[in-house]
Length: 141
Image (cartoon, rainbow, N blue to C red; front, top):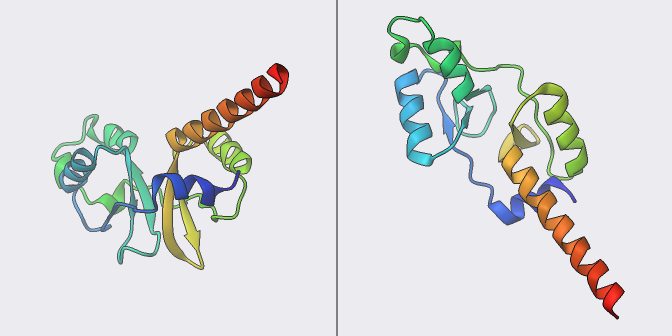
């Protein structure tokens, strides 16, 4: 299964935030969309970074006026990305090796989707259910 197959099932809408936005604006965005991470982008297309709930928790622990801090100062700038034609197994390996839960999908430098660990698990469960069904049908025939 390819990353494109996952995106076809979930859609390719990606929530982004400006690097100049505050952590308070970030928290509002995360809550409004019920998501755990946001791609940081100055123009809604390029990837400047990624910021997650985990980044906010690290900041909030003892930082006065944490809500006024700019997203650019807490984001991960070294973002692991993938392409839509890459295999889901490679993405799982990347997520495990880098201990990350969200990977932007990029084509020619432009953001085209976002895949989360939940999306990967859901697609893998779907594959396993299909295989089980096929084996059951084969055995009962």
